[in-house]
Length: 382
Image (cartoon, rainbow, N blue to C red):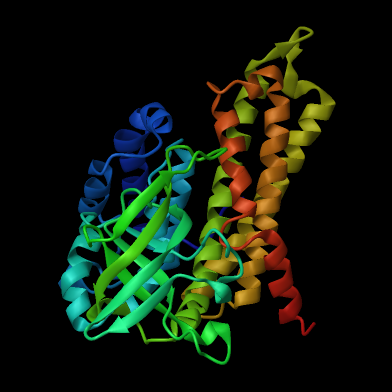
């Protein structure tokens, strides 16, 4: 089904993204998967090509363009080319809004040029060993001491955690707030600050090359000028930006599911059983037809949400619904694709096995799908 949300300039941008992933990333996929993290050089190349931070002001190296279709293109081409690991989605989908809208002029001058060029890799630290979806009850603290904050605590499941130069840390700055969510602030911790260390590189089921780490903060002295946005308003800043993050997850879901169906369609045409291609058996032909139709439905849904982001109309519950439905559908499709590969689907050298492993976390991060349904239900007035 033809998509109608893109203009000619988006096609040019897509060609750039596709070439980047095919030539710079795909050749290193096996190496990165075994090692558990990517190189830094691809970030610099992505920056040169304009694939990072395009919504930042032009004076800091960006293009001053806020268009979520560009986010979709980068995410889609990542999956459609078979690339792995590179956490551009964290920088473009999750943190761009924070750094574009919440930074002071002084912070922009310090951080944005490196952000756009790929020299500064970013991460956001929300989840803790005892607080995942329950963000209002985080324990990491930031105590004011003169012109500094003293940060103590631990974070876990942090994407880009190993490579990040700038980490936006959700901290409790007012332990006496009348409601827990009112005492949270966002503070940018920079690599090299004494007391800030990386814990374990977490051994995950999938997405092996996408580095995910524990972060530890032991009396980290952070200048107060590293406060992002308003003090004690961090929870509201997070809630404002979470819809874009969740839609980004939905875009990843649609693209990886499409990659899986494309691989499976080719396999079903080549693989023979009982003297004929397995795709010609009615049960398999019907499965492929059903998945192709579900993909088209999912893409229309996601594209509608993309344009709603651009117009400022995507609500939190709509984004939650998109994240829930797309990731559940993604998992169902990829699991069926693996089944159609038979025994080969269970062999790691086949890409479908990696896609299956990598898809499982989609229903967990960005807020579990159970939380997504609760958000939708509350949006209905319940």
